[in-house]
Image 1 (cartoon, rainbow over the protein chains, first blue to last red):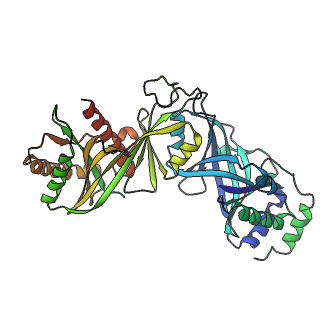
Image 2 (cartoon, rainbow over the protein chains, first blue to last red):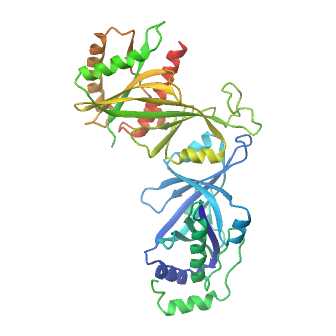
Image 3 (tube, rainbow over the protein chains, first blue to last red):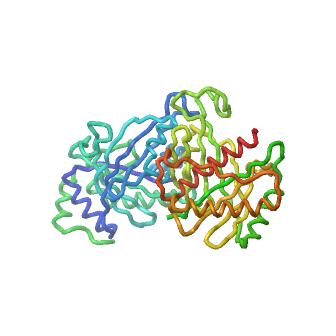
Length: 217
Length: 225
């Protein structure tokens, strides 16, 4: 399973966020360019309708594929009390015929999106991955070179950290604590509970850029 | 790059029942050729069947499926690469290579269910540049013998074409040695059509997965006959 929070930021403040993340993490950023295809099961296949995501990592010299199943969010009083979403995730690397494979077993393409941006991966109480990406849609099927932004001027920020049944509370606390550092620039919350942009982000970004970035903590 | 391999299955003479004595004789044959036993091995094939929303097709091989649903998937877990998992769609001639988490993805999707697991297991022999794996095919948690097969690996080459002649020579020696034991049947190699699956001449683990699927098909046909 994993803990996840999301938020949005105006593109004009992304550079400041990058400076802040660089300072907090102390690791170099990685380029993100992922073609994500969301497939859904055909009308009569499966006990329940199901959804699977195929991610093609285009940032590598040779594109690599990952199959990703995102499970339902953890429910109950415990889950309500924490400010991050805890959900099951299963991933498997796959060969480049994976799309044809899923078409072959009865899945259909629901939508596709190209995510472009950067990521920081680092250890901070848990193994964090922070991605800052813009979502782009394709005017034609699979035409990633012609992709255009879905929400121009706005980028998605996502923090994920792997967790297990016996430690998700600790991981959630680590994620929540890390979110505090980013609070001047953006609000992060459970996916689906968007709290919009932070009004003071402009001033915080200006301050960050003028001070030359944060120091590694 | 993996070394070239060739799979063979035991084809019993008409009317002869399969028994584990054949396996013991084949192992003896490997030793008489100078092979040294150096461990056990196990490869598994898992049959997946579709599950439909009305719950009718979970186990029925004969039931009608919608056209866009695969009637059967084969999962292959190879002994030599425990971190990998292969899934074969025979009608589409497609072999997917994934990692060991793939069965869990399938479980989560609840669209195909693992129904039957067959294990190929036995002993491994080193014989110069060759590795021989001789084993039986049995259902999971059962000792019912479904077949006997062997895997011949030739370490120096990964090109199927280049290794063909030496494999044939080895096969001739093997058949000659085995013939002395007057067993009621023989080992047969059935060519898998790798190019149909888009695989090249350079041997890969996907080739092995395809060969296991072909071998299994032959074993089942032999049992039916």
